[in-house]
Every structure is written in C-alpha cells, then in structure tokens.
Length: 388
Image (cartoon, rainbow, N blue to C red; front, side, top):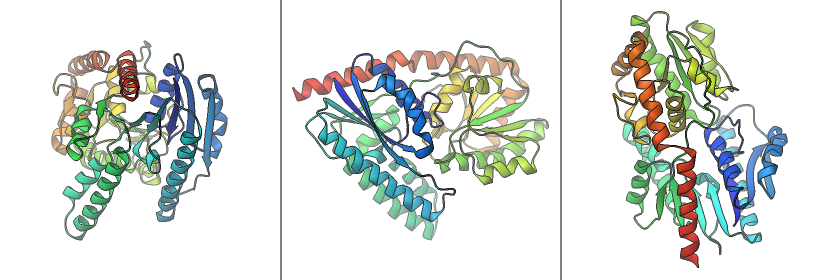
C-alpha cells in the first residue's frame, strides 16, 4: 500500500520525544511491506536529521519552524498557530497524493485534516480530554470555572477531530473506553507503543540509592510538574530514611525551575537529552513516575520495566500499563505511601530485583514490537476490506 504518515514531531531513532521514537520504528517496520510517505513538522535545526528517514520513505514533506527561546504566553499562541499551519499543510498533501492509507500521529496534527477517499487512521497517543477533565475536577473557585470551560472546548474539539477518522488507535484499553464513552460510534482499537526498543542485553552496575525520573520536558509541562511534585512532596520523606539518596531528573529540555534544583541541592542531578537510554535506566536503583493527571510518560514506565528497573508510579501512571501492583511494579498516590514504596526498594535490593524481573517479564509478554505490528497490519486489513 501507499501510506502517508502525518507526524506532529519528527520521527527519530534517538528522539527526545518517546512518540517520535515510536513513529520512527513504525515507519521502518512498515516500509518493509509498504511504500511510506511522510509529512512531518520539525525545527529548522533538525533538518539534517531527515537523512535517517530517507531509506524508509519514498518522499518526505517537511514543515519547518523556528523555535523560540522561551515558552511564554506569546510562545504558546505561536505554537498553536504552528500546529494549525502544519495541519493545513498536511491536509493539502493528503488530498493531492493518490494514497491508499492515511495515518495521522497525535490528535493535534488532525486539526484541519478533512475526510478523503482513502481510509484514515488517527493514532491518538494521548486522549487530550482526559487530563483536561482531571485538572478541572481538582480545581476550586474561579479556577474551576475557567478549567471547566477549557475542558468542554477540548472535549468538543477532540470529538470533532476523531469523528472524521475511520479508525482511532489508543495506547491503552483505558483510553479506548474513555473515548468510546465520549462517542460510542467511534471505531477504536488499542495499539500500545512497543516497549524497550532501546533496551539491549548489556548489564550495568546500579548506582546505590539513585532515583531516576526520565521524561521529555520542553513541550510537556505535565512532566515538569511531576518532577517538582516528587522533589517537593516525596523526596524529603525519602531522605529521612535514606539520607544519601540521589534524585536524577533526566530528559530533553528541562526548564529553569528544574535545572535550578541542582544548583541549590547536591542531592539532585539534572541532565539534558540522554544518549544511552539503556544505561540510564539500568544504572538507577528505582525509576519513579509520579503521574498526576494521566498521560505523558507511560512509555517511559514501560521502558524502565523492560530494562529490569523497579518502578514506583501512581494509579494514573499504571492505568495505561495494566501491570499488577505489588508484583510487576509498586503503586502509590499519597506522597507518604509513594516515599515508603521507594524506600522499601532502596533498602531491600532482593525485593527490588524481584519487582524489576517481574516487570521485565510483563513487558515482554504484553508490549513486544512484533505484537504491536501485528495489530496495526490487522487494522489496516480491516479498513481496506471495509472500503472495498
């Protein structure tokens, strides 16, 4: 088939964005059987990285933009217009080319994508209404009113977008049920991102009492808030029991409110883009994922589990993973319980190793690349039969 991919972020094997890493692998695998075309949004400085995609794409349609230094109110408005411009650009390409299948990555990419003759798939990555609803429910006073208005705007936008597509992919059964509750007429299938794509068979010694949080921060405020929550509410409780504990904040684009932590606290280490993710996970004693509103770092949880690193997360973090709390990972929503779980793993290496091994086995069974590609090919076949 002749398939056009529309990606909001540049697909890359060493991408700072987990979704970008997944889309790269998806294109590489599908190019073995299909003719792949790609419309992608990218920063001007990323243009040389397009070379790595050329072996897998018949043609690439880049939509470049210049990155601002800071993300203030003006930057956010400019970003929204940038998303809109890219969506219009991709829509023109989709309707000019004679494609057999169109797959759009991320809901925001599809703002202006119109229904065409070929089957259309939306790979949602995140159900954007879900965190908006949770933020609304947590708010009080005038903030609740404003966030309620925001929630209804996002919900209506997401519904208008998803209704244009013949099929929607979600990362988890939870997200699938959430979307179907919003609109029962949607055709939704669960297609998780495969875990452990960068995990090798290499063995590294774990650094004692190191706690890792790895995520992309530059465009994901939810990840910044999660790191700050852990540092302010959980980490002090951990250090009461483990005084030499270290908190490593790793990942692309940490803002000043994270990098400043390292300057004033010797127990915090803030790194930028991680070249060797495999080693980064395996050196850590514990991986923490204090997900507060859902979405954003589920892939990192799976990758940590694939590396055999024990994970502590919240119920929001586990909802898209579906692991067994207490067996495959530890789960806690209260700061005291979260801290106690981390301390338990730091002080009991045998238990930590057991949790890590169980998590690794869980990921191998449920999130392999082969299983995910099988689901995608089956979904394509179903759409083609339906159209014909």
